[in-house]
Amino acid sequence: MNEAKKSLNRKIAHQEGWISIIVNSALFVLKYWAGVVSGSVAIIADAWHTLSDTFSSIIVIAGAKLSSKPPDNEHPFGHGRAELIAAVLVAAFLGFVAFEFIQSSIIKLKNREMAVFGALAIIATVTSIILKEGLAQYAFYTWKKTGYLSLKADAWHHRSDAISSVIVLIGIFLGKYYWWIDGVLGILVALMIGYAAYGILKGTISKLLGEAPDKQLIEQIKTIASQETIHDIQLHHIHLHSYGEHQELTFHIRLPNMMTVEESHALVTAIRQKLRDNLSIEATIHIEPYQRQ
Image 1 (cartoon, rainbow, N blue to C red):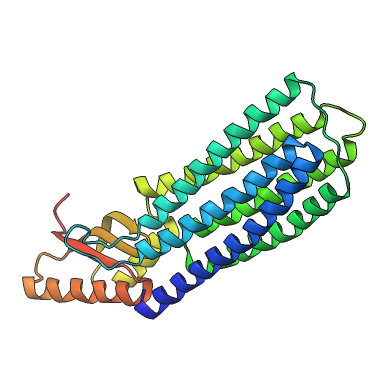
Image 2 (image 1 turned 135 degrees about the vertical axis):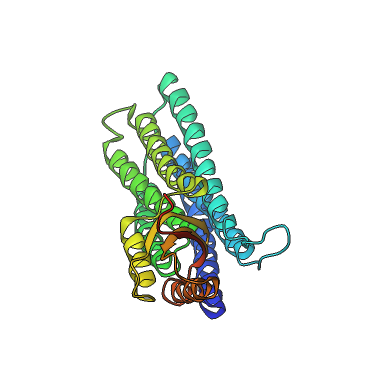
């Protein structure tokens, strides 16, 4: 990926992060005020969920900035995995928030506390649903444009907040009939947040540990390599190492025994350049003779 594209991706990530911070900070104040006025643990929990989006957006901005640092002696493949670590931190914070909300909701149920909802609670919750889903759509758009997983994590964070606000809105209209509705909804909101955290953590850790390249990418690699020679080269031991925007590919190829070192080197160099141009992947290729198994 060229530097202009990387710079644009970082700019998009920063923009998404700052918009999220501004909107979420304003929503937190509105929802927390509504929660205190109504005595609703579900709305207060929803407010803190919104504020946690602000923290996750700060992590997105910091992750994008750190991942853009060029390679150095200590990190020869760059700092791209900082963006994955940022996504893990977002997920971990979500899990902490979920745990705290469950505890608060259980205490309220034990004390048989009932919330008293008014017009402010409805206005705050409806506003949250509209703005949070809008932020989620925007974050999903920026994730697809940049490929930054922390933006995808941020999008699901916004989406989970919008869904939790929908649940709270339902509870507002049912609250006058059931004293326990607020505590139960607080637990449901917390479980949704926890599930979102699990999904983000699972996908991100998988990439940090290393994933096998998908079949479509393997076929692309084989096609590109075969276009550079008339010989029946056999690719195997294909491994892909992801460092954010930077990807390193290693594989073995079998070449005819009669090829000279110079011919083999020229072929491998041509394949590496084609992979760099077409897939933005840096390749290391090990050569083997046909008879070697």
